[in-house]
Image (tube, rainbow, N blue to C red):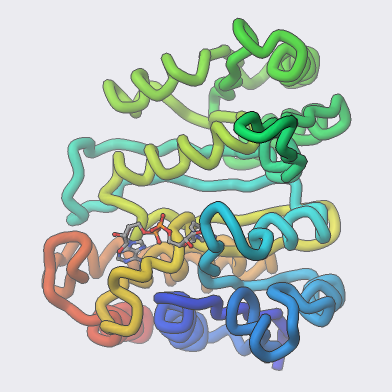
Length: 334
Ligand code: NAI
């Protein structure tokens, strides 16, 4: 085997889309030895914790993981495994390329933007407490160090991928210290990237601008919460959560996963669209230096969608996950 990669199939539709993705990677000719792990509610039953240390150690060793979605209980229960992994591995940059796919029905045709989300702090720091009964407080933590590295990442990413502009998304008019710092640091960093145009957008106006004409946007950099929300909004611009990939990247390792969650409403039915995780695996292969295999997978995804004969339910077809995966494998190997 050429590579060893940590595999977290997750729950809900996770195991279905993960298995499909493994098949597609194998068809693209990259031999991977997978190290699979349970996480989330299933891991609590088996190990007493939603994110066993063995997972973190495996990713630190292999430096790369492919991950399916993991359900997080709402309001109560265990802390999000996603947040735990991102923090423990310092996966500070979440990168989500949002691109129109020919054949996938959506309101827009030429969307091609990248959301770069700060992944380790902000309102996702998880520091919450009850002040007095009936009053709760959640702390938004913003550090200059985290602002600096995410801004630098966004500009470096823009330059490396031949993009022209970085939009800094913020709410510094209201959160003058936290978002003010994010904006100030991004302005400083932008001075070192004179080849990349920079502009600024208040988050609410940015939502309106994205819905009105997403082709005006290129790379967008923002804090954790805004990135979470704008990722789903942007997925809606290109046909939904089933088609948008993602990567969580740190200086030492990276975890590749789709934007979507565990989709409990369709779990186990065999109808999930694996496109998002398959495209995430193409990002993973690029990261590993397997550019040709990544390109073949992306072309296969584009080809099968453009042809439109095999479509999953979320984008207006009736194909099963299995049938769609077979179409991808056939497109890669033909
Ligand atoms: P969701 O993304 O799971 O589902 C939203 C809607 O999109 C549902 O109607 C679902 O059927 C559909 N959908 C999502 N992915 C799809 C796919 N690949 N193919 C076809 N349809 C798809 O979001 P929701 O319902 O808010 O979250 C469900 C659970 O997932 C929650 O427990 C949440 O915490 C977790 N979650 C986990 C994430 C992760 O592990 N990275 C990310 C987001 C949510």
